[in-house]
Image 1 (cartoon, rainbow, N blue to C red):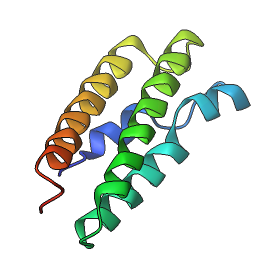
Image 2: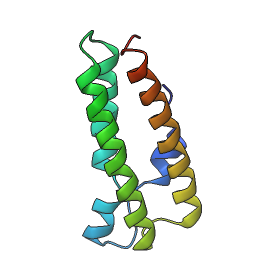
Image 3: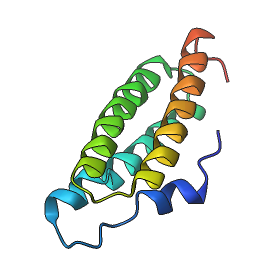
Image 4: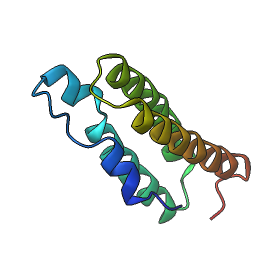
Length: 102
């Protein structure tokens, strides 16, 4: 699974100095998602981790929409992030359907 640097840039820090915007940007959530996916890669009991990853992706989707609605995220950046989140979701879903086999 490849999470491009552009994805991190698209959800980078909000320059408005608004705490709500910073939280809505999803940076913490993305770091946690990355940690979950790395753990899943290196364990045989990955089903629960992949379920957690799916939940984190859903939270991240809502955070991205909120960041866009609060104008903390440009529409173009939102589009890029939404597409990347959907792609990661498809990969995680496929991994779950395969029984979590690496």
